[in-house]
Length: 460
Image (cartoon, rainbow, N blue to C red; front, side, top):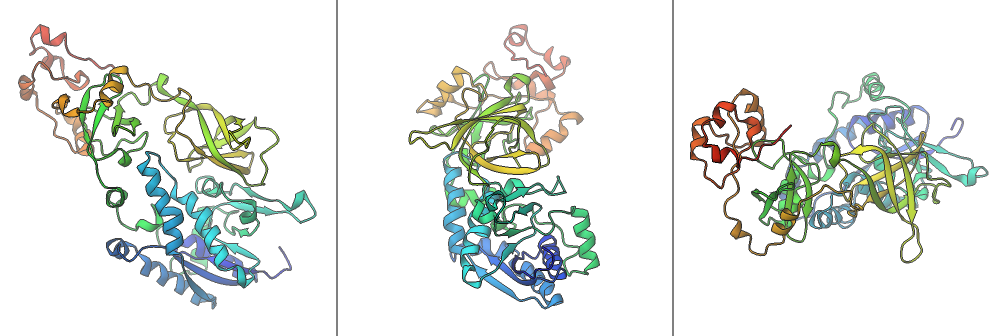
């Protein structure tokens, strides 16, 4: 926008990306006011508050502004964040879905509640350090539609997190670093001699700070003991703390030997988690799913739903896809069936699927739990056990024995389990199940022939 001095509200987090965005706008001659959003935590959560590095963030933000004499204001949006993001996340996990806090934060807080909070200050635009591009059309062309496009850095691109914005929100936005790479952002930070030029990128969910997400979930939802069942056999393998701690495709935290094991399905009503070691087998892959709550950045859906690209998570990877729209009971069309060009193992209900055509992000929808029979196949026995009212009748979990050797040492360390030694195999009872993938032929020869016939032999 050459020749025009804009009044810009710049969201400043204390990180390198937003700091470089501020400096680029200032260097271009625009009038910039920086805003730091304080969004966490309620008064009765002091332990979380003390773990959140807000003081450090704010110190860096002030130092960056002082270099160029830009004003900095702190905006408190704690209540809005709790009611619009955190409470929603908690409820979604309680229902067995896996929400995306970053998408919600952008839609409801950064470019929602914040824009409302500064409406009376008459800023031309709101800017941030997101890796994305917005192309603003003159009002007399294309109906004045602003277009969200991919950034030049495909690894850092954040259009996935911005894909659920409205056209009214997109029209207000500027992303100054969307046309350059992360490496160039770091070089500019050094050139500008920013106080945070060597600061590492933040990771994880913004409101948690250094708190583990599992601790946060335990505090707000609690724990309820349930069982782990093998999807293919129905074997009782162990217990878990509550289905809401697990998401489809998860490996960590299962604490099962002889793995790797993966979460493949969940029975929400009965608090049962189904696991498998065959998560990546060819016949278990998924490429068809349903999406709901579809929102299009241009206000209207695209004219054609073929030759689209789709992202089902943040990252540089796309799938070619087709989208078939489905009208709901009220005649509204905000649900559809997506068919990907290739298989994906990590589809989880509650996550977002973002749609693209070329460089343009068209919009997104929420992945639904209705899989049109495309989910991981769970055997009848496992489903029947899951519905048992008195699961204490199951007795002890089956014992899955693996040989302790160097090749399994890493798995033992990762899963935090005790791997039995070969001399302990003689203690196995007739009801135990042996995973023979990690047991040598010498060990098998020590069992009576009638035992060997009962062994469940898993093939890689």
